[in-house]
Length: 207
Image (cartoon, rainbow, N blue to C red; front, side, top):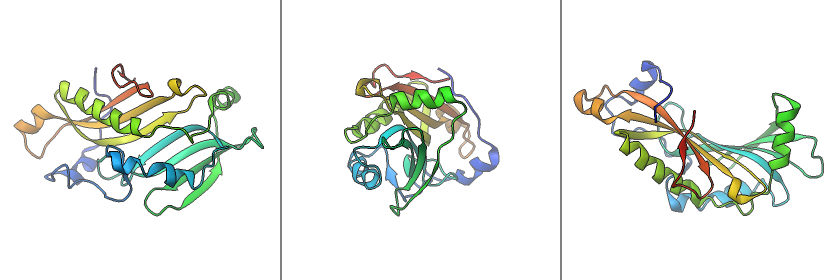
C-alpha cells in the first residue's frame, strides 16, 4: 500500500511545530467520535426527509488549512422522487446548521443514470460505521509506520442494498520515522481507503 499525493510545503508550514491535537478546528462534527456521530441524523435529517433519494454524501474538513477528523460541512447529491430527472446538491454547515442548495452536475447521462439507480433514502443509514472505519484506517496507517494527521474527505456512495454502500476515507498521514529524525519537518502524504459499509476488516487502499 502506497501513500499517494503530496501537499505543498507552504500548506504544511501552517501546522509546523504544533501538536496534532492543536492543529485543528473545533467547528463541526468529529467523525472519529461516537457521541458526535450520533448528532448527524438530526443535523442532516433537518433538510433531507425520509422520502428523498440520496446518491452521494461527502464530508469536508472544517478548515482546509488544518488536518483533523472534524467535518465542517456535508454535501449531498440527491433527487426528489416527484421529479427524478432533476438531481440537486445540498451543502449543510455542521456548525451553524444552515444549508445551501444548487443543481447537481454530472459528466454525462450515463453517470447520472447510474447515480439514480443506486440512490436510496438515508433514514436508516448507520453513521456509527464512520467511526469504526476511522479506527480501522488508523490501525492500517500505524502498520505502515504512518501517523494519521486528519482527513482530506470522507465520502459515502449510497446503494439500494445497504450492504453495498461504499465508504471512502482520504487520510492525510505523516511518516513517523521522518518525524522522529527531524522534528517539525514531517513528510506528509495521503492514503485513500475504500470498503463496503460495516466491513472494516477487508477495506483496501484506493487508487
